[in-house]
Image 1 (tube, rainbow, N blue to C red):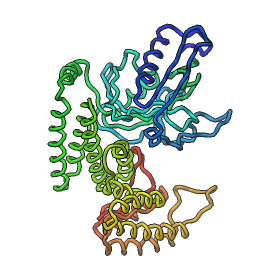
Image 2: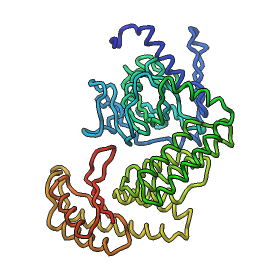
Image 3: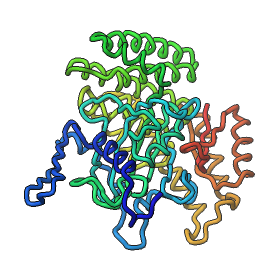
Image 4: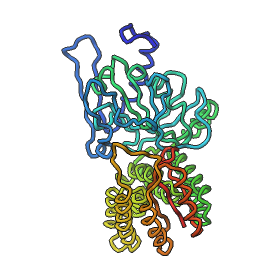
Length: 444
């Protein structure tokens, strides 16, 4: 990579120009107008967006503090949650949700959705989900993508969600992309890899996509997969159900839509599929994935179909079990507003209050000075007194999952497993982005 003060080679400029046009041009709900001619007096710079649509993508977590010594998006990075893909911190990857299969091969065609942010700017500058757009299509290896984004995508598998923090040297460099992207901007992409194709198979895909009835032909397959997945779920074949729901999602994303009627139909099915997946992941005690499915579903349901009480119930229950009681209550209250007479929702809110009490009791007997926390320290005897009572109550009650926060001491995890086995209960160590946490789930 040339020094920042060197003249930028023409081939790099072409790559940046292609990527900039692909990212910024013709965005539904956006307007970018740039005059790069020599007469600066006639330059027009304008940016606008549909606030009602962009609002749901605003993410205040992206905002960091201004400061000379702070790395952009530094507040999102911990010692253990990221991978340095380039060895010099120019592309950092934070895995949000694991995919399946092999990583994308060289020179393949990828279909991706993404939300793109600039540091210290709360609204994204590009959102592929707006207006129900189909995933963006890029061919790797020919300069269609920003260099840093291509490096990141080459590490992804089908269905994966990941976050890439890209330094300006591998993004828009010192040029930026006026008026929205300033010079030397660090960019963050939240990426969902929908699918990828070999160069040969994409030719068949292109031929099929010219069929004016391709959407409804795909929809027939989507409905078939949806019914098959429902049957597998009833048979408690959760993995097989998940596979079919995800295959249906892939078909919908690939087909896209050509008019308002197709768009509405697509959004309804996307919302159904993500909601059903949230229940599958709840059954697997994959609570962080449940939350991810909720986020994905809302990108569609908020604009094109009615809100689903089932989605918010699943989401709220997952948050309760992750001990995020405030957010859990918010989601459950939405579910209750949608179905005020639903006894299951009322019961879950009652469980939330009991779980909060249990968690408070645990905190009282395990309180430590935060400055001197030893994450491998054994739990105190007082903790086990509280835990034993709650485990007994759980076994006799009607809840199906109990979670508890431990230190990361393997001996304590073994104690929990032994106590659970006495009741013939299953134990799961909860993971987030493939990394084990200190949250333990006990399941009937």
